[in-house]
Amino acid sequence: MAQNTATKKMLLSGLILAVIFSSFYVLDFKAAQSETQTNSRVSACSSGNPGIDFPDRIYLYVEGDDSISKSLRESLEAELEKAGMEVSVADAVEEKYDSQALLVNVSKDGLYTPVYASSDLNILFFYTYTGEGTKYFEQFKEGNVTVVFENTGSGEGDKLIRGDMELQDSTKGPVSLKAYRKHLAEEAARKIVEQLQQQISISP
Image (cartoon, rainbow, N blue to C red):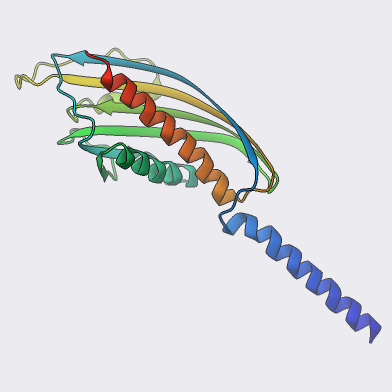
């Protein structure tokens, strides 16, 4: 009888531990402190005199279907909408969009445990005012590229913005995997939109 009671206690303790451990991978909670640093290199080039109205319609494409790409897509959509944009999420890179577009690629290295996590995100973002020149997004991923504006005869100016961002994060304390991804994505999205607005506000 005593042996059965001890076995039941062990099984119950194991079940409780399994529930607690799995909650870190299923639920969304964060009771931790984070130190996040970003380093960015942003460049822009213009042709003509593009009359950019940032609070307008914009296409958003975030490359990849992994968890961090999905989280970044959601956070960028929210940040752009907060900035007054009407966001259309694109499923693929088009040769030309009918409005301004933001294309993003992200890669992640890091470590996650329920009580400590660290990450290094490398992000490339590319903005085009006219929705053209998306070929440079693919070329920028492979290295530095010289941008050449083509005269389309439309008389409309263009502005292209390229950003390379490294985000380093260290988080200590209880944090679920879902909450940690959300934290990284929100930090990155906020910084990308901030950099974008700064570059757009600069006259060509």
